[in-house]
Image (cartoon, rainbow, N blue to C red; front, side, top):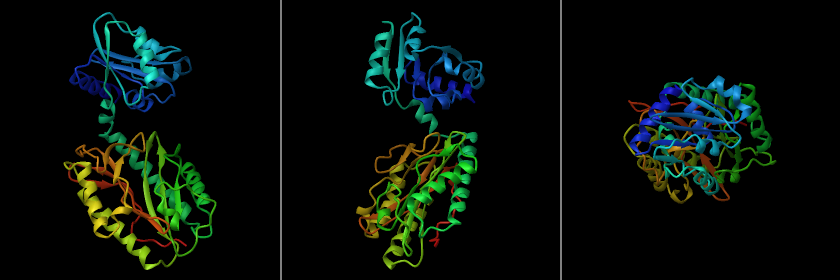
Length: 357
């Protein structure tokens, strides 16, 4: 897989009229080479397959990398990259979204005069956005594990336990089931606290007769999952139930629009129009969704700014929400694989309003 990804990347490098690309963001290095250590860089081009790390990872790199990679060990990775450049004129791309100004200056100073540094961010990310079969299997497994872990926690109920207690139990349950950890800190937010999209769990007991937003995910074999459900802890105020049904309708209609062809902006507009018609447009301020893979937030984006065309192999979230300050919050989120025929929802928990007392 590493050889195929390197070859595909090399072809993209040529399309951008570059001779080679410096890959320095660790998650991109991992996707490209399979290396899981904490310090590495790679240089890829039609004739280049260089991998640089430090002495700590000498054995690990030998174990994890395909033989085609020229493995180099150095204390200063960027200096080693520069030292390995030949005498021929070279256009070297770099990730301008990741490489800091300080490190760019250091690299530019170290490189010989025959090298032109060219901003080329996003090349690897565009390839990562389309998942191969192995990646799909890994993300599906992470989603299944996360679903099972949450069910473990829900068996103990929600009301009269604190938000923080529930969040910690979710993390423990995910680890007990074999994940490396959570893909992000779980969100557990009851009643008016649910009106904060990224609420921090509090040492406050969850009351009966309210809504509780639970947003959680697992990290398994390097890949993330992401899901949100909103539960009731008893009979609800009619206002809260109406908001739940509005968000559920928007989520289901947006799911039906997820397929190859439309842009992220167009799918976002489907859910947004429904929520606006329901009188809560001002209470849906975030984008509809985002890509998920080695990172829990990556491309493509489903938002007002989502210009990328959705393609088979993308895995995205679909997560509309309504957040009424001081009153209530509702978010319903699925993890969705885009297929040639439409989509496959990877999140298995039901979405009809569920009472967990």
